[in-house]
Picture (tube, helix red, strand yellow):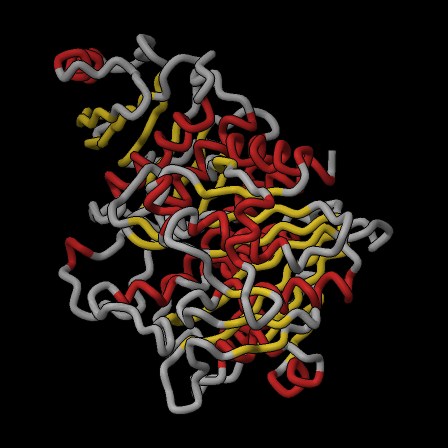
Length: 487
């Protein structure tokens, strides 16, 4: 969706106009019929409220919408602004209108507030209709652009920065939404190469032959039952000219997960196209950082494989050797994400010598049992890193909840015939998964694992997304980089 700023008035004026309203502060210049209508419907400018009415202006019927943004000093002001922008777009996305004008005169919004409002609007307007060929006209998206009127000074520049983040979120949603016959390891790489061309990002790709030569038996063990070969994708942004140790983000990219020989139940298996949500988030975040020219040195690595049952697939009880040299007894082939991550993390640490490592993965169903779809789980070996990520999650809306790690949990994944096994007992499943990954983190390296299984896909619409892919993780990474690496 296009967003443009307009300074000079035009005639005829826009026929669909939206205004944001602070709580209990209906604009004094609003036509009496609209003001009375708002009061009659109990619209008071509370966060999330929307009122719509019609009025005649200069001989033209104008459709006017009011969106509440709550109290000006509320702690959740940013969320209220996003909700208002998203709510307005959701209301008019398929309305038949092509242009929505945001009239910010008298709103009191700052440049940053305006960017937040527009970010909510842009994100809520994203929908993937590529394969929907028989939509009725009233189901098709008609809204093409938002025109911003009477914007505060600096708003257009602030939006340019936020727009980069929006592009990253949308790219992640695209990757996560596409079916597994369209996005698989090779095409994931190709999609990134195409979208990131000309951005200043450096992309490096390892194929399965190169990974085999490096000893990545864990990652390749996951992929060996699929006709689709595995790939490892590294994306580097040298926003500080590469003068610092890079911050490393690693994403699990299982482009489809049947569970392998430990096959999943058929019901709901179609959802496993989004088991690459961690890699999708890393790719989208790297695009966002490049688009806004972040002043930081960041590397994103995506371990890409498809987990399929086949005569060549690995079996429960197999022992594989990871790139680190540690041997792994594969108890359950459906605990495959940690096998992909351990080799990707080992390679990335050796190659880039990062200052810290954060991995993102749709790793366990257990985290959904624990947290539902409100928070992603966070595990960390470093309190300072965990605190920075937690703050970034709160500021961005991609919220995190920290879980424990410890020696008692670590013992649960000791194997009687190998160095480690890939699953522990039923209890503490998310924790033992994190303990597994921790065994592959270099000594002294700050590390955090984010289990985002409950967050990358939504069964119902929310303030800034429709049902489907949420783009979780992009804004979290962007905020972390802003506050911790660029500050």
